[in-house]
Image 1: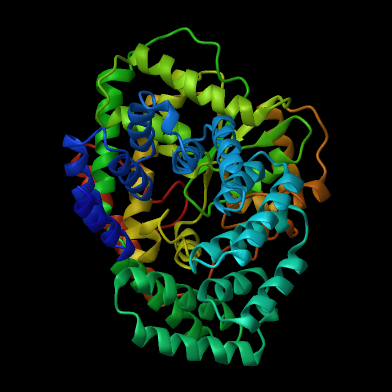
Image 2: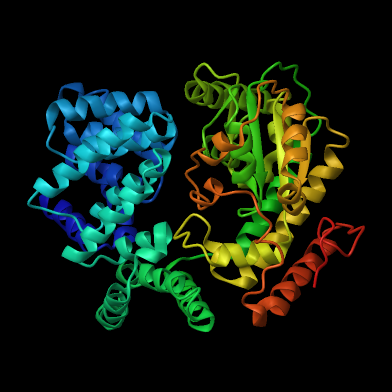
Length: 541
């Protein structure tokens, strides 16, 4: 058995996670009492983002073998609980891990993330500083782990209004040793800090890494951030060169990730059919949801700006882009065999307990996951007193903004204008469906980005009226609001209309609209009727 376990460790070391995962599951099937296999499989479940499966594997073994709970158990259980947003339980796991091995950086990085989510910024910065100290003291400095911890510190610094400190820290790191991810981070924080010497070093490093790393995963870590960092650097120096680097970076994303836009389309069809067959006629009396606010729409459509408007008042706090609601409903739609009443009860128990923990003493908690638009009907059935703000923006402006973001894995369709267009058409279709299903619902407020930025005062009042917020609005407080998204620094500026009618990547504009209209034909074949040639009032040209 030790030979098989050693082979698994070698596969992990070689970053062949998929093969290791398949082999580990085979071994576990007949060796569920072997602690080493349990540890490896739990770790691989985490690498595959199967966090509930990791928790199940750990619980099944350690409930019988409680005396064997060790550092690995508490860390793996802690990261899994954090990832399903059971933050309170996760922190307890890390307390136990720290008692066992206080010298490990792992004891501090995830708790720092949780305290950032809880908006306890001073506690978060204290923990991440300890983590970085432990990384520097360690003889085994993990190259990839270090940039992740540094990135987290820069995010906490934004919350504490210490961006200047982040810039100085990154410059110092790059002077000592060049890291692609650190260079990219500096470009996003303050591109003006990248002088001619550092830019030349980055381009030289790019040439070296481009030749040195041929493995897709290696390229993703060592080459990919350089593409996007250089694209940002040249944005105001050489527009054509900047766009070339964005193209190369997104091509790298396409080569590294498996994304099929038509699988997403199928998931929408499944959602529509599931709602029609099991949910639409379900009527359950429920008083829940009065504390919950959902902000949703396409990514880059103004959701963060609206979050900052609401989150800056005295009545509300934000949980950011929470995944709990989305994942619970998605799992139910895609195979959980539960009656609607049973699922509704389970959802409310888990989701409300998690959001109430984040809400604390505030009246409202914001869930700003844009993709919750897929499940509007479900949310209003389960939490009928919740409020939903739905955002819309010119599709081409959304496409450009998405294409220029290094989303890595969370928004894979952003790497191609074709895939973005198909996504936008699918977004349109599911919202047309919800509009048909939920007529004249007083719990939904629609806002267009262009109208919002042109008349922020009017829309701020309209949003507060809709939500029942009585506290005063303070623009300076809004600008200091922290949101852990791609718009992390943009919301700290004055609201402006510079992002309307973008003039970039114009050679791809027709391709984008052709793909969007082509995908519309698919939905027409499925019985959708488009009452207008426009996209929620936006011209398709």
